[in-house]
Amino acid sequence: MAKKILVAEDEKPMAKILSMKLEHQGFEVTTVHDGAAVLDEVRKGPFDLVLLDLIMPKTDGFEVLNRMKHENIEVPVIVTSNLSKEMEVKKAKDLGAVDYLVKTNVHLSEIVDRIEQYFNSSN
Image 1: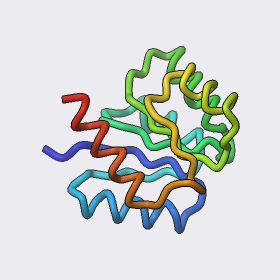
Image 2 (image 1 turned 60 degrees about the vertical axis):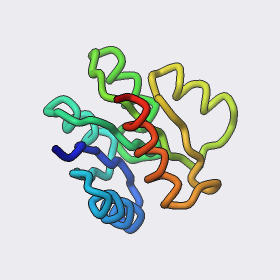
Image 3 (image 1 turned 90 degrees about the vertical axis):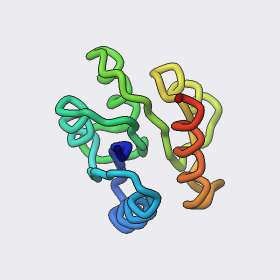
Image 4 (image 1 turned 135 degrees about the horizontal axis):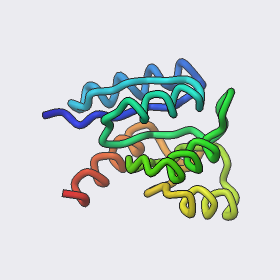
């Protein structure tokens, strides 16, 4: 059965390309474009992974992570962001992110590789 991934990305062209690449790799993908929609989707669930941008409208990624933690929503989250300061990475990981990728430092294929690595290591 295909792993279900929630892609949370406010840049719609990026979200579309990423979703298509993940679907091509055999994943089932749901895409949302703001933090409030992320919370709605993870509450409905189930998802095997959330790929979360930090800078999004309505509710930012840090608040999404915080609410997921406080509501005991146990879905692994890989953060993708242009925020690259050590304190931002630490904050995301402290709130439960399993990985943190700086968008400007990775290619799309590397994001997909990290997702596959996560699933391979968690089995």
